[in-house]
Image (cartoon, rainbow, N blue to C red; front, side, top):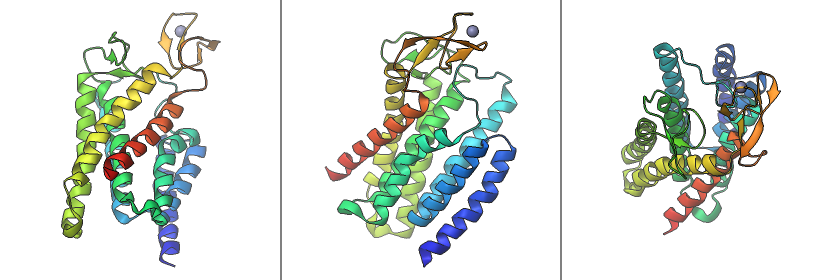
Amino acid sequence: MITFYFAAGGLLFTAVIGFFLYIANYLTRSGYFTFILLGTFLAAFSPPVIWFLLGLFFGSAILIHALKKYLSKKEDTIGKKGATRDAKQLLANSLPLASCALLAYFNVLNLNWTLLMSTIIAATTADTWASEIGLLSKSRPYNLVNFKKVAPGLSGGVSLLGSLAAVGGSLLISATYALGTWLFTPQSFTGALLLIPLLLGVGGMLIDSLLGATLQSKYQCQVCGKITEQENHHQKPCRLISGYRFIDNDVVNLMSGYVILLLAIILQII
Ligand SMILES: [Zn+2]
């Protein structure tokens, strides 16, 4: 019965918040409906501390995005999509968390699923902060595999500013989670509650960059020669120069989410 009320609350909350995000162009229409679906599901199946961490993630992401827009007029034309999230993008970023919530609800393997969910949120926050703030970097980012300089905004690139931002984002989530546990259930507090999300939050950004630099499809425009993640430039098809055509940024996010989850489970067991 309680689950039903939580679900109803989640439905109402995400319908209202999502509506404003839709109006402000942060969500497409399909993104809006997926947002409601995910919000309702997570409200029903995950503990309140996870709702709070998700609020922190979304709040900080929107704040950073708005600040960046205010500070620079530079538009990101390299990434496949702009800031507007569609259904596929939302699902790719939240399926690892949603599957965790379901496993947590049925207490599968008797693991600390709240810790695992916090770790995934820490990694998502680190990745979002790194890509948003990293774009402001004055120096060009490096490709994590061959250490060549790449254009800012291209997946797989890592800059010092972006990496510092990743540490900040990961710390925000892991420290909030650890502090909350220490305050409300001090008997279950251990240092691992801070360390696992913090380390894998930053490590997750590296895994994401590594997959982005190796497997993700990159194209070269046949008109202006620019390297891009978009399949078309100036309405003309671009040439695939690295990675696999079916692995775009969404697929990379989905894969790295599950890799982080697997690593977090291993760290929790040992
Ligand atoms: Zn072009």
